[in-house]
Image (cartoon, rainbow, N blue to C red; front, side, top):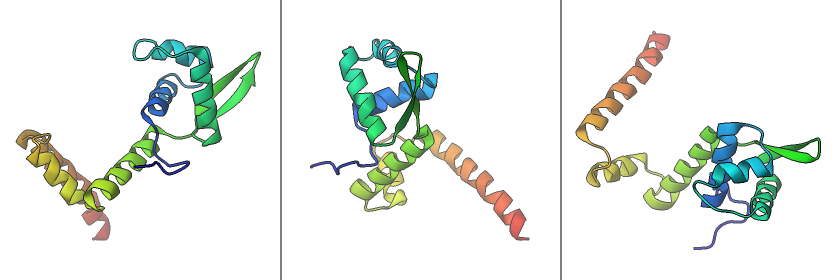
Length: 134
């Protein structure tokens, strides 16, 4: 399936670069390349090109400090996660969070213990709302 141009979704390589920036904050191409070395061996020019792609997509911003650009995330990790989950729900589960959760249970990704923890978390989220309405 072809990807939408300038999609909200990050490619796996873009996500790797963003994760470095989320962890380090503003970083040069060289810093990003060095941080990625354990996971991926990429040429300096490849990292530079991909950071410029992210810049064009407005996922990062940059500023010139000395002779090097410093790139910083313009998209938060939470925003990226939200986009990815929404995309997954829409494409695979017809927008149904319930179908996603049922799939996680059926595939044993959600154990009874984890499901119980989620139920407690949902219960805690709802309590303050009820208190506000009273």
